[in-house]
Length: 248
Image (tube, rainbow, N blue to C red; front, side, top):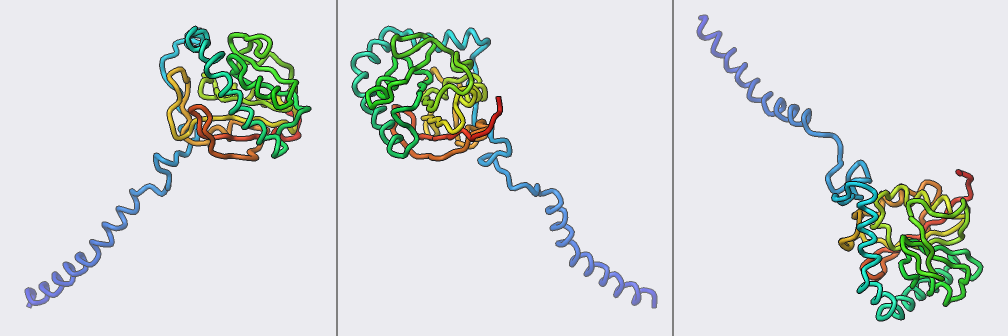
C-alpha cells in the first residue's frame, strides 16, 4: 500500500522539477545579465573617444616634440614655397564659404591658432578680413606672433572669429578649448578642422574618434554647423558659436 502511494508522489515531484527547471535557469540568466546597453563602441564616458598618445614625460618634452616639426628646415621651406599658394587658395575657399553663411565678415577680428607660417592668415587677409593674426610656438612676422595655444597671449573676449586645424596637437585639449572660449567674444565663432575617421600625423598628441568629447569640452558654446571637408589630412569641420553669457 505504501509503495503504490509513494510512486505517484515521486512522479509528481519529478514532473514539477522538470517543469520548473527551465524557468529557474532563465531567471538566473536574467539576474546576471547587465541591464546597461552600453558597449565599447558607445562608451558612457565620451572622453574615451579622445585618446591621449603616450610618450610625453613632461610639458618640456611635449614642446620640444612640437618644435621638432615647426623648426624643421625642409618643412618650413615647403610651407613657404611649394605649399604656399595651394594652401592659401584652399583656406580662402573655406573662409569664403563661412562668409556666405554669415559666420565670418570683413569686420571680424580673427585669430588662427597653430598657424605656423601663416597660410591661414594670408587667406583671411586675401578675402578682406584684414584684422587677422596667427599664433604659433615660433613667430613668423608679420602674419604669426609667438604664442602657446594652451595659454593664449590675449585678453578675454578679444576675437570675433577663431580657426584652428591643430586640435590633435593639444596635450591638454580641455585647456585648448577653454582658451578659445575665454578669448572669443559672446556671439563669436570658432571653426575647427579635425580628423575623425583617420589617424593624425606623428606629431599629434591626441586622437579623436567621435565629435562627442569635443562638443562636451565647449562649455559656453553651441554647435551650429558640421560637415565633411578635405582639409590637408583632416576630414571634419565643426563650427561653434559662443553663447551670449558672461563666464569669465
